[in-house]
Image (cartoon, rainbow, N blue to C red; front, top):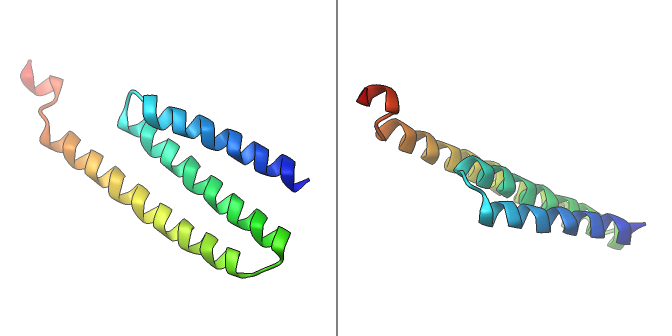
Length: 92
């Protein structure tokens, strides 16, 4: 049962890495990063269930916090770049 779960998560990781590398926009890359963080949290939870150690849940909480902050920082960076660049409406 856990093997099927891990295989599903690894398939999601592979697709997210593909989207992260090939993504035509920064938004695609942010979403791929969120998927990678979610997969890391899922793998930590699976490890906690399999080994019955609470340490993996603490690691999952840390990964969730880092993922949240990383997503906010990247989104803010993209927003600032969009504000700094002239839009098509201003040129015409």
